[in-house]
Image (cartoon, rainbow, N blue to C red):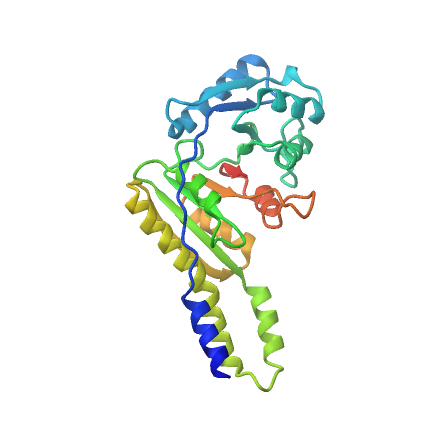
Length: 284
């Protein structure tokens, strides 16, 4: 390797993206249900208890099922209310919660068109929620295809983690994609395949770990009483995250859904939102 290339590689390797902490304020919260008014009030009471992490500054407004008849009506209600957060559940406005294969039209519109983030809860009638779901947010995980530099995701994760709780920052490199690249590299005689496998794998996992360490340092210096744990690995993403839910007894997943390059939900978000139905998801 030419000396100039060696110097450039060393320089780039030493360059690290550092976490930027910012307080996230959440005020008005809109709770959307398809329930009659009395049942909607009961559901909203559970939501209020679950969102105690937000302190005394947030307010709840409740939308009962009789207030809208379509996803278009619902979107108009959300736009008029202008909340910081919408809280609802999977398969809102349909009976398809009986079949765990979709989110439903209303939820699709809310997550992809409405401006505020959506806190998506297990359906109250489905009976799939884990025992600890909706109790608190002591154990929160941030999920993304590329964690490094995703300050907003981390800041929301911090905001929803109870004092003294644990924030898991997860980064899962797709092992199938990794192996595809390794197969290609193995066909190039000039490259030592074993060396490439080890060094590429180490670098792929080193960058998110370095970023997570900066999160840990910055939050400690800011006096934020949240324990930060790194979960960085190679794996099949959906099945790996399902394992995380069980292993770490997670209370909440925080992930992106909007993608500037497409109308459909952000790549990893949709399969996770459909399959991980046992706990709440905060969809940004």
